[in-house]
Length: 320
Image (tube, rainbow, N blue to C red):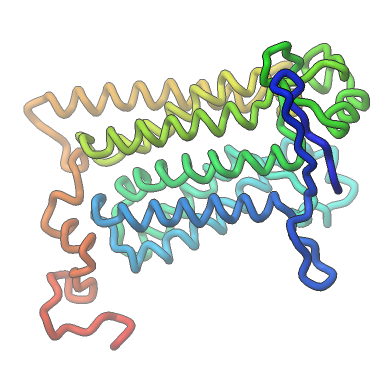
C-alpha cells in the first residue's frame, strides 16, 4: 500500500501510504479522508454564503442530501456506462464503489437533478442554489484531486518540465498499458505531468475569481455559468494530457463535454446580459436575495406554512 512518489526535477520524494488509519479490520484510505475533507469545506463555504444568495440554511441541508445521493449515483452510472465491458459479466461489481470508478460529469448531472428535486420539495430557488453549488464544487474538486496524488493516478503523459512526477505505480501502469489505451506514446523512465496538481490549482484560482465576481453578480445563475465555463475550459485542456481518459471512439469524453460546457456558459451569459440591457427584463432574471422573500428566507425568517414573514411568536415546522 506504500508508494514512493518523486519529483526528480525538484529533488522531492514522498513515501505515501494509501491507508490513513484502520478501525478494527476496516482500512480507511487517504483518498476517502481527502474527499471527505473537500466535501466538509465545500459545505462550510455553502452555509457561510447561504444568506448572500437568499438560501435558508436549515432547508439547504435537505437539498444537499438529495444532491449528494443522486450525484454519487450519477457518477457511478456514468463510469459504468463508458466502461461497460468491465461490468457486463459481473453486475454486482457495479455497486462496489470502494473499488473505484466515478465519472465526474455523471456526478454533476446527478447532483443538479438532486438540487432540482430538493429545491422543489423544500421551496428553495434553484438558480441561487446552483450559484452556491458552483463555488462549493470548486473547493471540493480542488481538494479532492489530491486523492489522485496519494493513489498515483490521474496523471498525464511524459514531460521534461521540472515538476514532472513519477513512482513505481506510475511506471507499472505505463508498462502494462498500450499506446491505444493511454492515447500517447509513453516512456516509463520519463516523469509525467501531475495533472491532479494542474486541476487543483485551476480550481483554487477559479475560487478566487468566483469570490470576487459573486459580490458583483448581475443575475442568479451567473456564478453557476462561471463555474461551468471555468471548469469546462480547464478540463478541456488538462484532460488532453491525461492517459486514463474515458473514450468514445478516438475522442476523450471529458474534453468534448468540457468544450460544450464552455460554449454553453459563454452563450448563456451573453443572452442573459442582452436581456438585462433590454427594456423588458424577464422575471427570472434578477437576484433573489434582493427580494423581500429572498432576504427573509436567507435570514431564516420566512414562514413557509403561511407564506409570510415569521412573527415573533411563530413556531418553526419542527416545533409544531
